[in-house]
Amino acid sequence: MTNLGAPLQAGDVFQLFHAASYLGSFAVTNLPPLAAGLAWSNTLAVNGSVAVFLTVSLVPTNLLWSVSGTNLLLSWPADHTGWRLLMQTNHQANGLSPNSNDWATVANSAVTNSLSLPLNPSLPTEFYRLVYP
Image (tube, rainbow, N blue to C red; front, side):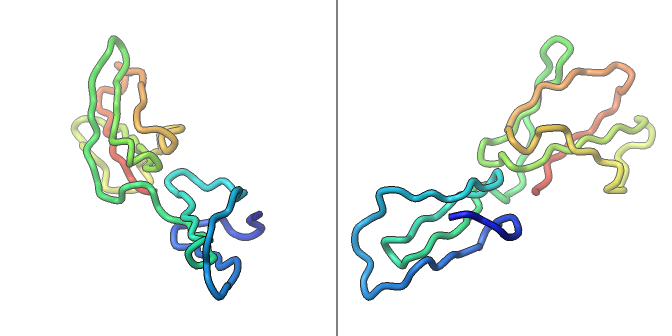
């Protein structure tokens, strides 16, 4: 199967065939790769279809942190791989900005559940949060 349309998303269902009865199994299925946080549900032997479902938790979670030398280590549960880590740097007196444009995505954060980031003494107030997608 090849996807020629828009990127696949959770809830997409593809009815590949109809039959009077569905027995047995398929030795091989060649389905296209999916974005992080998505997986295939293969029910060909049940109802002749395949579907895309969400594997990532949508329940907000907390970041775990520690410091190792000059690095900040951040991690979150594995079932939240696919969430993006956002960072905001403001002067301490200003606190968090409510403007969503002031948050930047940390590179490669959506493909992992842990990152080691260098501590920068010139940026004493860095704020982090997870968002999906």
